[in-house]
Length: 480
Image (cartoon, rainbow, N blue to C red; front, side, top):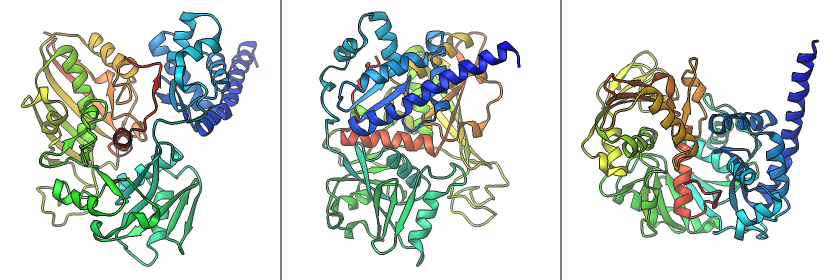
């Protein structure tokens, strides 16, 4: 072994050792103080040492160099001495600010974190009870995300389903435990058939069987002031969804689909501030609307969008047939696993509900393709302000890293990525910089946006839940 090889291994081992030291400290901050740590939006909770080091690598895209694990370890150790209340801490931004300020690190952190110091895990609001009405693809992913959070802010209390068989409970638990796309559940699941419960990593979930939302008495299970998340798609208007509000223990309803009528369609990061306390029913729009609206907002704010067309290349979904059979929708009766199926999408028009300034400027269509997850939206736009590929990509990369949309928009520049590389992405959409096209005059652009239409969308839904519940922790430092 050469000296250079030995030095490389020794350096990696030292960095890995520091990351391993961070893991229990990160966990302690989260469990004892409700402190969420991240590096430029990449959360560090429940991550391996390698995952933590990969998050440090991301910093080079913003600051020119990787963040040193020694710096983040020093920050985490200091944070553990402050007995903090609930707060979301971005270590990369905090480190950059601390380096610029100089002086004693602990004193700097006390000033920066202000009222959160000495609060012993106190939160601005009590955890809100969450009920999942339906337990399909989105319902189970929402459950995974809520369980992963350990009850902080949002507490999963129950799921409501129609009983499908005598061993329904075991089958529901098995579908939560195993997923052909997203892999196995990370943790332990215990089923109690006597009490109809599923316990997942300490989260006790009551399974309620009902065919009628108006007949469920949630208070009999100790559930109160709950947000019911309807992921069945059965009702999309105020009258249908309003049935949930007649059930005891329910205060608000969130639909995981585009709503009809005057219901507010919310894309978190774009118009979530429109949610008022008086809004009893809110919708989280569609996966495609969530993927494209943040990118379109950024582009419209910077360059101005005159007109555009959105073409979605979308993975097949459960409403299609595995093999040719009758379907009330056009073309959707043909085999989803054997065909590309041209179909309609309302996503382009739905953008205007979250971003009114684009009203009437966009058209859209969709092609369903034989993949089970991860889709792509192709934004074909005419801009007011001319640009170039380099300028546009730099702008979109900065949006993903330093803007208020950094939780919604990601950016990648790789000649080798394909759709499966984005399974499990927590962003609403990921701009593929290598595919960006700009016309010679700089006004016509084509932007490609990948999105995990299941998991990425579910993360957006949870963000809307947090806004409805008022439980999202204050971010330090604030992103402006």
